[in-house]
Length: 334
Image (cartoon, rainbow, N blue to C red; front, side):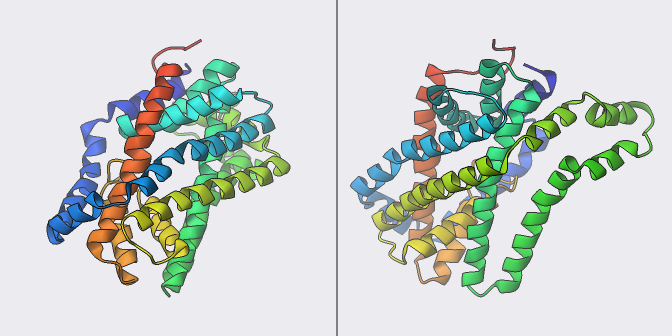
């Protein structure tokens, strides 16, 4: 594996204490939530959940990942990279296991490793497909999360959140993809010493970032529109699963409010202050659903069931996929 991709993946897997200590905040937040609520009622919500509905939600993880794998393959094809349907599905599903079993977003790097190893392309080209794939998920959550804030009349916050999220994605991509801005960055005065060497390696001719930029620019609009359709299908399944879990614990506020709560909970899990979103997701969902009249204990029970469905059960499915198709993080893997 190339040094850039290996360093990113292995560094995330190691999880140095100075980097991962802030993630304990989410666990502490979850502990505070549980301590402040009726723990017996939380247990009863989970214990009395409708098991057939929970089972359907868990099984639906497989078609959800299948749809996302199809989207990812479309992105790869736009870059003239061909990854088989079976390998793509196993790689995507296996990334769930790695993401759950290790700190950080190492699962995303694993998908890039599969492309790098199986398709014999550069690490930057492999990573570009994963980056584009993740951006579709991010944009979907931002749109639904913004609608959630708008629905509860926090409209100024919704506008700021949407604008901030759009800028967070658009500005770096614009600087990277636009010829003028990228050329301007290259013409900036050099830094002395090691800093200057690092900048030259990052922006210079033949650099990893230049390869990443070229790979992203190959994405064609027709393929991106198709990927948008697959994203809508994936999130219809995802929110449908969450709605089934809500019904399983007796929450009947409707499909849209549950989807809004889940979207906000998923967005806050992107903050690096938790482990697999524990604590931050629960806080967001409890706050949103409580405003709709849902008991906090029921909202917390729903959030914990979502964690069990997508992280624990999904991670176990991913472990089987990883066993069938592992990816080496320490070597070339070819």
